[in-house]
Image (tube, rainbow, N blue to C red):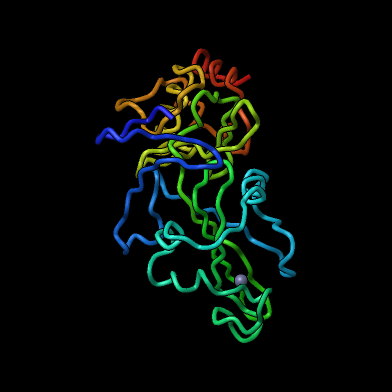
Length: 254
Ligand SMILES: [Zn+2]
């Protein structure tokens, strides 16, 4: 990673052993969401039978499927906050109908803990299942890493509803790094599309390498912003680096 925090901490990424990272804390009233560079909350709704994740996007499913269950640790506690911390150690109703986090035998408000094997970021998943299971979903809380591992290059940027992803040349999916409080969106005029347009210009300027959170101040290129704000940018799509370059040159992606 090339991101350098102001205090000069050297960030080190070494899959399988360790990585140094920075955590920002947020006041409790903001809710769960400590963040490396931006708190992430992804929701996976389930069908009534509780088996298939049917409404999540393919990208959310891809990310969820790679998560590895693990024991809760201090980072999971930091993700969920003190009120829910004790629940991290309680089993799901599916594993134990007598668990303290179940409701009337088949409802559930448990937390399950994972890590992302690609980035080693903590992930805490909050299960919500009403009694009889009419409504059921999982909300995944995690931190957004600061960028790709060193040397990795962006192959594509993915617009996926309210989530923006990037795929590295090795095919692995990552969150698009975002500065605290500077989220992305598309398909309308506003701050989110402006930030995404600036980030696309930054990505193209770096030729897909060394992507870090944060964008320069000032308005992005008018052509890029016009496309990002247009209905064409609203639907789910994966844009290659060449398409991003084309967008910056011509205001079109094809
Ligand atoms: Zn559960």
